[in-house]
Length: 257
Length: 224
Image (cartoon, rainbow over the protein chains, first blue to last red):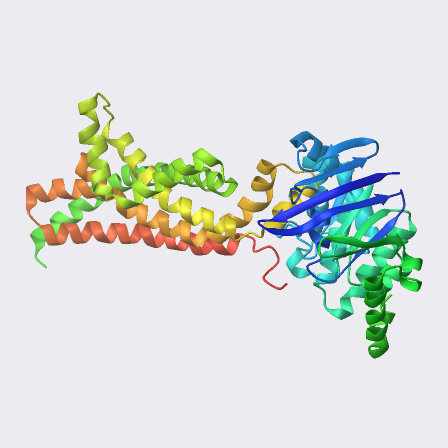
């Protein structure tokens, strides 16, 4: 087991957002985190990278145990060093070029010499098909291109796991495919990924595990195939069926990847 | 215009200009540098929400913005000696102008920093940067670009404001004009002349602002 997440709890004032979420992740797993809006998916992901402080919960990463609510600064830094985070809104550094966006964390955060950082960055950008735009600024790129740069920025850190928070939700429909195909390539390369998504085709065809959440609870967690073909709970069945009828109505959306 | 007045004005011009360049300009530059330093520190403290320091900063801004500049000058230069703090006129002026404009500029900087999306800060943490690195490499460069027109305003207003240093005996351009006027009684001509020199200085600054705005990178335009 590479990553064990136990009993994550989070409330905003008197609204309970996460009510004890647990998840086991093996190396190479691609976990799709599904659920209706407001189910706590994004908050769950943000708690794992300390962008949000959980009220309770525990994480065992590579045999190191960390209390999510009480982690010290050095523990947070150490954990973040092993992970990368891809945001819904890309969050590229707007005053930096494509290349600088990727090298900044390497030279300043990881203290890698400039020349080496550049090589790592160019390599990562090549993987996402953005090596031709090294000197462009984010404002000169489309949303899909920005998101691919953001993925390269994460990849360059050589993380053990990448968290994706609705990576295609802010994109125009015609730009979603290019981002999903980069993610699919990563999955095929064996990258461990936790993906909060509404892209059901991705969840069905690329992920090997599904965590289905609602109202801060885990409704179902298991292999993707089983979840889509034979959902265990009534709620999951309802969710999967509603998607099936949705895709019948709009067959083109199903063919994005 | 009669010949006597022309003579006086021509005679005064090099003196006024010389005090302008030797005193008014350095006074402005030093005060502005101090104000800029103060504003960045105060804005950073508020942005980072450091508990006690934040309150001190709010108090500083409240007091400075709530009292007249002239009163502040008098308090420091004429008031503080009675408790044993005696400063020369020029350093007093630099300190008071710096702290005064710093309070306004701190609010400008804070607003500009807050206009940089928090997502970029989060992304900075995620790639392993610490708070100072994120501020220095991501937030402040963008904030300076946003704040540049307002900061230019502050600089121009400060240049003219230095004339108030005359009231605490700093021999700068305006005080020099009053001194000459004391001998020749040509208020309209002399104060008009000194006003024109201030106008010329400010015109140069305005030109510099336009040049700087063009020069400052806009990071690839506004297309998104």
